[in-house]
Length: 329
Image (tube, rainbow, N blue to C red; front, side, top):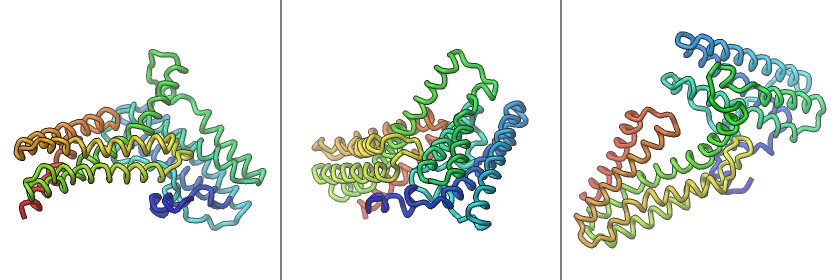
């Protein structure tokens, strides 16, 4: 891994550096975690959707069986002490949504989360096969990869009706997941960073100097600099091979461009020579930016719209007020 990759991965291990024992250890902990997540889904759905809860109970049991198989293989090859390493310690693993955040989400949203979990597990086993020369370990990893990949469509298993053919529905869902992981999520993070983080320096400069040209220069510098930083951070933090998040170049570009756009949106009004006119226009642009962020979180991230609006507007207001207070100090 490059020095920049190491920096942006915040100390996470690269998959290529894992030993065979560590590969099995990560798989054991991942199966255990996923089993617990499926059990939590079952508990959350048991009253309103008992049939779906039963499916998640079965999936939790399947993960337990996989875990036992992996532990038995580890014992045969490496003994009783399993290294303490989990998937969140690896670069490229997309972090799971905490279970408690799933309580108020729809059955369809939980289904998509489960599908993503299965796809992620299959990718891990497929890649892990290339990292071992031991025939028995390779066979086990291959069998588990097939087991994850061969799971029936979650829509079918949960009894949800679909108007399209199963093949078409699966392709459409895969395309949607790819779009969200590769474009929407990094772009949203960038837009949030650019729209919010640049507010304080921009308005601090504006109210400290009352000079629109100086304010514009600070806004341009903050926006473009943040765009470059966020683009590098996203592109170098995850090669997409384990997380399935797609090309790092595409994700980095989406994050970097949207970060710059978020900052430039409320910076460019300071091309207007008159200070208060520029400031009022910039303020309304900020409102539009924060509303757009809230809508994207509601549309693609399944966040309740009222909750999304309150969170984003409150955060933006605090940063905006910070900039004004510092500028008037």
